[in-house]
Length: 285
Ligand SMILES: [Fe+2]
Ligand SMILES: [Fe+2]
Image (cartoon, rainbow, N blue to C red; front, side, top):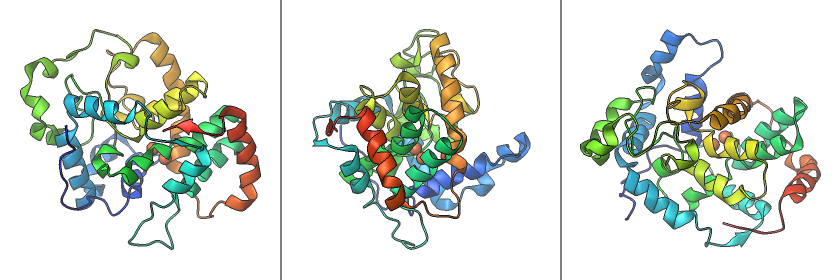
C-alpha cells in the first residue's frame, strides 16, 4: 500500500509538532487550560493532525511495519545515522533552531545532570533517531505526532478526535469497539500503534538496550496513555510498571530545550564511550 500523497508539508519543520506538545503540557497548566489546546494549535499543526488522523489506519500501520521493521535497508552506526538525521534542517530559520543532534543532546544531558543510569542517558541520546524516516520520503504525519492504537476505538483523550471521522477505519465496525481486534489487557506488545519514529527506533535498538529504555523509545509519543491514562484496558501489569519509565523520561524530552546550545565537540568523547558500551559499530536500519 502506498502512502497517501500530501500536496505540501503540513509543518514548517518537525519541531513545530514537538513545540505544540510542550505548550500543551506546560508545567502548572490547569486541566481546563489543557482542554483549550486547540487555541494554541496554529493552522499548520491543525492540518498536520487532520492528515495524521485521516491516514493512520490499521492497514497503513501494518504496511509500514512490513516496509521498515525488517531492518533490511542498510547497516550504519548510531553516529552515521545521527549525522544523517542532522541534515534535516528547518528551512524557514536554519540559524536559530536547534539541530536534531542538539535536541538529542539537550535531552540526554538533562538526564545525565539528574544522575540517572547510563542506559537512561543513552535512551535520551537516541530517542528521536527514528525521524530519519522523513529523509526516506515518509510524510510528516507518518513520522511524528502523538501515537494511539489502531484496530480499536479511538480514545477521546487523543488530541483532535473529531478528525478520525475521515479515517477509513471509522467505517469498519470491528475496529470501533473498545477492544477492537485485541483482547482485554493483552499487553501493548500485541497492540499496533499508529506508525511513526517511536516504533522504528525501538525496532532498530531493541536488541541492545535494557527493557525500560525500549519502553521509553517505543512509547514516548503515546501521550493518550502516559499523560492521560487512556488504554489501560489494553495494557498488562508489566506495561503499567514499565510506563513509570516512560513518564519519567517525558519531561526531559519536553522541557530540556534551554537557551544554550550544547557543545557537541566537548560532549562527543563521553557519548562515543556511551554508544560503544551498548552498540556494536554498525547496526541494521
Ligand atoms: Fe520523539
Ligand atoms: Fe524528542
